Image (cartoon, one colour):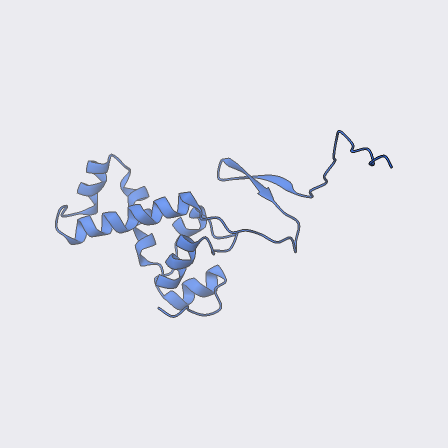
Length: 133
């Protein structure tokens, strides 16, 4: 008995869209497709900067945000927006670090005027309740 012939080419159909997001391309799967979470490097870097700068200010290494912005060679307005990330609720920060933030939680969104109140942040970002903190 002769074995069945194996085709030289296999065609695989994977439904997805490529969208531009923040200057880079991202693969968007159809609704209901299983998604493996990835940490958002841009968000993580911004959070790391925010907490690093906050520590530098709190330690007295720099007296003002203006002084720190000059040292880092960044615009004062950008630095203040990034510094506000240090005011995010701990469970939101944890979700971002774990890559479990929603797809709509982008650096651009977080750099907009984010409320200081943690419950309001959660409501705005679609977090139903706080994780145990």
